[in-house]
Image (cartoon, rainbow, N blue to C red; front, top):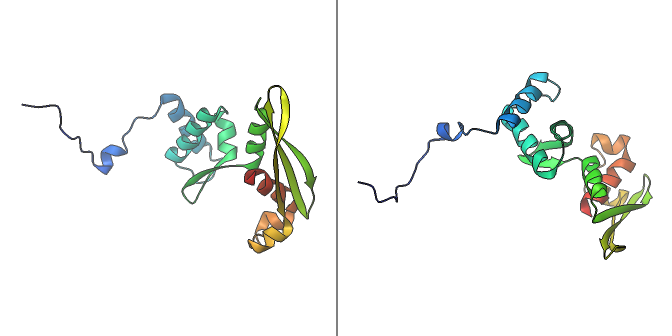
Length: 154
């Protein structure tokens, strides 16, 4: 006889049999089978697509703009920029963007008026201190990398 207080125990094999949303599963399987996204598992693709659904972007945008880095799902700076700019509440304004520094002002719309929330900067000196300059894109595209750091920091 049961008193309704039993504990359900699942094995790791049972935990992997969790049913994911059919649309997400189909899209994830298609992404993996396409070969366009490297060595991606269906579960990784499903994580990207599920996240995309939560933040209001398409599965294809997710596949190209969300990355799994050290076990964490991270967003490309170009997607982050697009999401900020499509917001009705927040905006950013580029104050400086060179191979030496990027400076971005963040704004919030309050009572119909855009108010400054402050600025975010990232300089080539900061990148040197963080030992980033020896990494590929920092050598070829310092302006873009400085912008990306200032944006994500903001």
